[in-house]
Image (cartoon, helix red, strand yellow):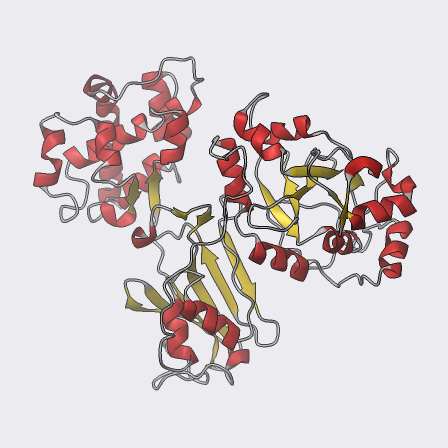
Length: 495
């Protein structure tokens, strides 16, 4: 039930009603709205007009910000300037959302009443990342008026905010995407008919086999895959929530049996790169399932494996890895007592990403990765890239200088340089020179870039001249790279 804004202390958009729970609370206890009155932790009720709300999405007058502000009613603020608001969601409902002062946002509760229950816990503040799966600090303060009102309404205060947050994120997984659309000016002025619902997958039959076989089959699948959803339900886990750019990993755990399931929108694996979206939702993949001995009675092990026998040598590492396929590896942790297994991790193998060129960043600063491209190109021309992935036929345009260095990073490299992209034995050069590990500052890649070009394009202002994507610029830094590589090789030979 909702009421109009006429008898409310807030300045919501004219056609956005204030939820009854908020109005009833503040009508009963108006002192909660007085300046300096903290209702719970650092949260205070706050009035902010729609014209001010638009600032979370762009500069003054930004069309996307104006469109978004029509669907947001701010009613709370935190000390850092972050605000709490009602969101008129395109797919229906009026959840409570968090707008960070640093950019980005998330849903917090399915409606105002659930959010007031959340306030009853006394969390000091909200953020983009916390799962609220732990109780607040012991000194978290809640206004007695709020607790009195919750009791009178029959609204209990939970032990943690995890369930309230999880329900909201499951129902409205696309708020972050909605904010991105607003910032990019893609939000229609009338968003009432827009749908942010998650793209549905074609229903697929759940894989046959026991829970062990199904668990292995979950690795690398999307969190909305029917098999993943079936397996999570079977072991007593809640559904996984889609990841966001502000929190690119998500997880669920089951207290009863200790099972943990992790997922990511950006797993470090070539087959799942780069991150991609369906509508407003980032595709999120299961990357790891931790199966502890505590779950032995639920998930049966296959023949050849036993909780009582660690599959590694008697005197060796307490961790043992077994590669199963290109998208699955098993890791066994030895028990502290005896020679049994404490935990089995089924996970997506990870690759080291030495260099990444973000397409989104290049839309803002299109030459930002030019210097990185110079290093990749030099390595390619010197035979330091894997010849199977980068044969002479692929690199011919760069040997002939008919294509530019940045085109190599964008094209054959696919915007990423992985460990496996390098020729055998050369990853140490990248590690010490490009990444700077165990290397004096003056001998690192960033220092050579500053010496030759005075500054990296990463750090130049928009009105400054950028280092061009040209062979002339490449030739200025190529001798530096050659000297560093030769010095690294001499040192490696000595060792």
